[in-house]
Picture 1 (cartoon, rainbow, N blue to C red):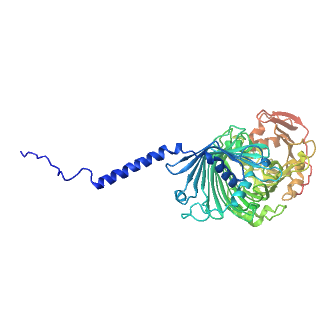
Picture 2: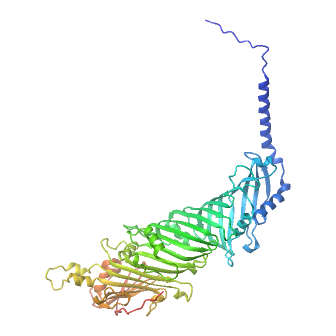
Picture 3: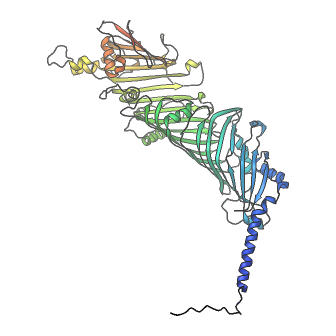
Length: 590
């Protein structure tokens, strides 16, 4: 075996060489500096500058600013920490502050410290509460003054690398923010929570805003309301009203039951999925608004039908002020699966002119057109609205009825067309503000007797021509001032159904004469319905199409007219009645 010989160090080779000494010195200095950066900032008081900092922020926002304390930190980057920041409101907008934030971090640009000029690169706010207030007399928003104040300050783009004469606009961001909305002194139930937003200056004369949050309604237990996203660009104009704006917004899919609570304040009893997109382009004084609404897998909450429905609507409007009012609203809603929303949009833009008169919709059968104005978006009851639907398929109405009852036969179908004219205006008495007429020139399935009597050569077997005439019906529903006649109470829909005379086929259904003795009259209200059938055969034919209408029908046939009453959700009550024949009625022209 070889024995190991221990190594002997040269006595002339010292342990601490000059290189090792320099490295140890640098390491020690770095440790000292790091300790100083951690230990010293809490002991460096800049409270003497608190008023000066508050005055500087107040001057840039145009609002009084207060905070409880300010502290400097050097790690991970130099900056300031402001505790409990309060931006006060101007008296004309109320007494509540514009914004309250528990913690605000202001990060400093390191390069600016060497030039003895403090420049903020980023401002971060944690859980701020922001109040958006609109004056009821002028329609101005409280943030408009802040934007005006900021637009008067010359700033360089946020991402500019080299420093210039103008300070670079900081990147402003907030997490877990809450936005509340007030109309004058009234706090609206709508707000946005868990919001994230950021604001920066990509160009010298252009701000960019990115926002997302969950809309809520404080007077309901609404939850799971989807996500609202907004991306906007605001330029600098000769005045704030002339400032150009481009905005894109989207409301991600949300359960329709929760969407109903958010919009109307209570569950409307519908299920499905709702989503929407909108864009705004123009100036803050006048802009073009475009929006799309999608209601998919639409059904009533009571049961799941074999086939659900869907609504796809496209709307366009002009806005005055910052969404203060909407004018020249135009909407197109396809009622036929063969008509896409894109073809309806093209029809809307090419065919529907500006003005107050509805166009002839027969050029695009089955497209529901809506026109109107909203003088004040904070008060939707002021809306003036007109609706028109021409030559829609009658089966469209039957498909909607299937959402309310699973007892309608799967093979039941309606031929013919639907026409609708309706309006809502914000003047006159409350009972005269709504009105409309729905006309169905329908071909019903053959009555039970006609289906069973198929004996060849039978004298009672109807021919095909006779059968077609017997199954042609006009159904007329009228509401409001259009339907005010006889003893129909206010708020009820008058119902009239009858077989038109063979000589009147193809003429105006509202004034056609009755053919034979078959007729139905009555009314629908929010409490239930009352119907009078001129004959039992008429009632049986109605029940063949809609089986719930035949519930509890008396037997045997008394040969008299039948009156039926039913509260919604309750049983039908049948009695003998005096038949009422339809009377000619003229349509109110809009």
